[in-house]
View (cartoon, rainbow, N blue to C red):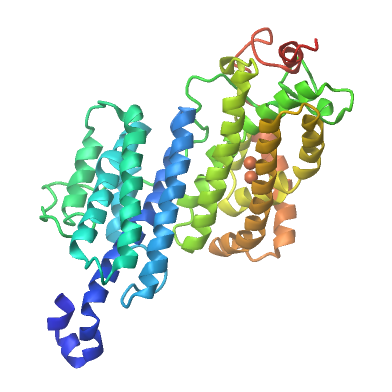
Length: 439
Ligand SMILES: [Fe+2]
Ligand SMILES: [Fe+2]
């Protein structure tokens, strides 16, 4: 309990009396910072990995880590010495910045899951050993839960890393962490090897201009007015003559392609290092919601007879939005795409109800509820993100200008991804009629 023996402690006996609490609060502060920096940087993996299930899993882990950070901060603030503000110390930030610079995103993934997160798990276990189980029971309860989460995260990621060889990046990240003595500084400290160079000092991370969809066929958009072009035929969604089974298939394609948001929303975390944690917390929830919405389609379409290898993934939204600033991306998402999706989705829900498909009704109801929250997040956080980027226009004016800019950028960066598959083999509106049995 270092504080009790310092001259500061002698000068100020109040500090000395709470030294035991302050030491544990300091560890909670460390864990809060590590979890929040994990969220900001691990999100850069999502658009770089091609496996859809891995994208979903990362969104889930990011959300659960946001929960850890939030509870740590809540508990930490009850204790003397947690400190004010949400800022992350540079020594931690540097390690995460370095870890994301893997040329192969799986190298970065292995840094996170074979080095940085196991060290978080170890730090939680160390916390339990270091604290008093009765005096600090409120923290203990939380930490015991986080340990279970971390153990599950390790098991859940295992199929994606398997026996992948240790990369040179992983070795470097391990060394960088050892130089701190682990997250809590309780392990043996090993000096950085001679000649160790921090690549992030000279190399700035940039999201790729195109997102990774692995082996899936790709296209510009899944929406059009042509049944021989795309799976979603806009006018069919609102036409009372369209068979409800066709509407259901089209809305599942729509939901699955919320994968667009799963790829472009994560770009906002990394670009806002000084955001209040509450902003990142809500973004993490938003992101996980979108991954669940996408999974609704991903899981249901095959049950209804759709071969997912014939469904082209749309890349336009990511490709265009990544050209914009973070406040512009977030404004388009919440104030345009989400805010304007309700009327058509309401029509679609009414039509799907004709089918007495309880599961479809449930999925659509939760989607609608989540989307209402997302628009609320938009109203709360867009002004904050604008502030972080020195944007001083009134919100409405900014949103209007952003919509215009999106249209201009769409001319330049949209509609450029040709169909991977010929019309005969890809899923189109016409094929959907056949699959629904109404052709
Ligand atoms: Fe959604
Ligand atoms: Fe949404």
